[in-house]
Image (cartoon, rainbow, N blue to C red; front, top):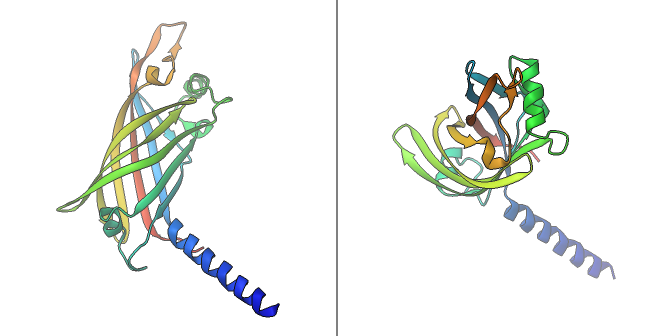
Amino acid sequence: MKNILKETSAKLLALSAILLTLAGPAHAAKCALWITGTSTLHPYSSTATQVDVSIKFQDPASKTDRIRDLVLAGKAKELSVVIPVNLMKSESGQMDKNMYSSLKVKEFPAITFALEKYQAASEKDGVSVKLKGKLKIAGVEKEVDLESSGRMKDEILVLEGAKDILMTDYGIKPPTLMFGAIKVDDKVTVHYRMQIGAEEKQ
């Protein structure tokens, strides 16, 4: 009986190790994100004061592999970004209230992005990355393409990019102020700067 229990425990441990390997190690990542747009009065911007990022790589050749090499080898298998809407802040409290209302924050408290696939190419001073994923805003999910340029800073890969989107594509009516006297343009630009660092300790 003891032999059977030992054999079963050994198999379970081996299975756990295999599953952990397939899942891949988690790496430290953080992201700065802000939105810019225009209105009939003046340009405006809103910054995400919190961005939750999760990224995992599959089957690294060794723990010493540089992040850039892993990205170029197509090893990034999971990337998700979550932005709490009520933590998007501008210089105007009234503008924030209008934005939260337009984004239906009570019903859909977060903006999310989930990676589906990507292509990376080596550049002279870094790497270029084309990402395809699903962006969900105000409960509406659409497939988007993102183009990023990357550079190494010490042992950290810094990816930067921007994406124009239309609010109406996500069922959002561009807000107005002063009883319609001030109108916000439908197009906004999402800017991001993501930093991917060393492997996180489990």
